[in-house]
Structure formats: C-alpha cells, structure tokens
Image: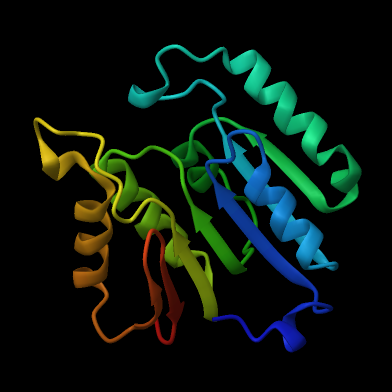
Length: 172
C-alpha cells in the first residue's frame, strides 16, 4: 500500500485522530524515522469503554511514546476542537482515524481530515467493519465512512479494504 522505500526516510507529517494507548502512534513513529505525529484523544473513552480507567490509558500512552517526545505532539481534547483551532495551514501526508466510533462523528472527522490531507496523502479509517451498535446498526463507523466516500467520489483511490479502509487523496 505504501511506497516504503520513498517514505521511510522522508519528512512526513501525520495525524492520529484517536490514540488510546498509543500503539498505532508507536508503530508509525518507529517505522517512519522522520515522521512528526500529532496525536489527538480525549482520554475519556466512549460507549464501548464504560469500565476502563482512562487515567491509566493516558499514562500508558505517555509511557509508550516517551522515546518519541521530539517527534510527537499530544493534543488532549475532542477532534472537533483540534480541527477548529488549527492556526496554521498544516497539511498532512498521513491521517489515521480511530476516535469516536459513532457514524456521525466518524463522518465529521473524515470531512475535517480530508481538508487537512495533501494531494497524494493517505487516510486510514480504522474499524471499517466494526459492529458494536446492534440496535441501530447505522451508528457503526462504516455508515459514516461510506457517506464520506460518496461525498468525495472520484477524488480518492482505494488502496486497501479490510478491517481498515485505506485511501489516497488524488484531487480536492
């Protein structure tokens, strides 16, 4: 999916929307040696996290990523707050979306991320086939992601579909 040879040592700007313990952040920062990553999370959880102590989860994030402090920006808050408060014109090479799993929130994160993705940039939607909401299946992420895709027809190329959907932005 990725042109690894070209990307491994390239200066990359990445955004992770929903970071939890930081395992995906760690993976990206370890793999891409010149990447700068901004990680966004509330560290408060959502519907599927009712029995989790998020003080522990946030500490695990901090501990897991301490080695990458110089290449990591941590934003504690809602993704909508982050996108509303971006003061500069940062464009990202890679955006990983794995925050709220409610379809409406996924759609909003997708729209905001799209505006901040470079042409040729990659967006990865996690939990594409995640099915937590049984009573109202249209609350699941796939519905928000598919709505986003329909709004942006012919502006992206699908690179991979599985548990994650990976697209490349090819036009505005």
